[in-house]
Image (cartoon, rainbow, N blue to C red; front, top):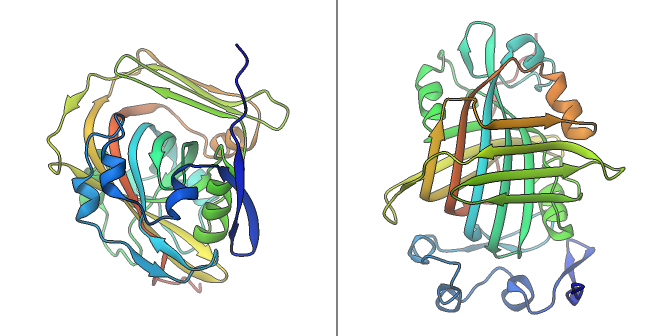
Length: 306
């Protein structure tokens, strides 16, 4: 049976008109959700995590908005790889340093995201990112390296961040300063299989992943909350964006067996090739989680004038 296209409505984001699903969460709540109503969605395990994170109203490049953006049911996959620091530095802004596993060897990752229930409605996303030392970090970063590999806290600089919907692109690009564009993007993650495909401009494959999902461990609500800080420039100023992930089911493997990444032709593939990846060292999958994405804030980064 053919699928009937969903009705949409137009909303204004900082002077840009974008389409969102009619009757969806954004159309109904404009980022100010009824958590009791969302808790009744069978896909959502609970909303206690969000009750402890009150939203605040802020001005932003996309107009007045509420932050953080709540994601009530998410699944994610991340393939971490080694890459030469020289190649990484060629793609990093001068003010940022790669987080190194050993001298001359840094960490990069390919990530895929599926947001089933969130304040801006369903969408999917992918990323090519570089692990970096925290801004103004003066040490060797070993503590940061250990925390990063354990997924407790990561600092990153993103080269590519395609998404599947218009509102996600406008908010991410204009509001956060991320390199986002809209493309065909499928992500499916369950406790047995993880698959993802990002289309290029011609409809072919940019990047795709097919993998066995690592064995999952269930975590009680509130026990495991990880964080990611991403650095972007908005105008001429550095900003940092914090995202907090409430992990409910997750697993990790260091084995490369059963993990296949296809690097095709497109913007993500070009970015990944430019980093000259050597080999994969870790594959992490969260089959169920929740996320709070905060609006970016100005941050101080040690400037290099030499």
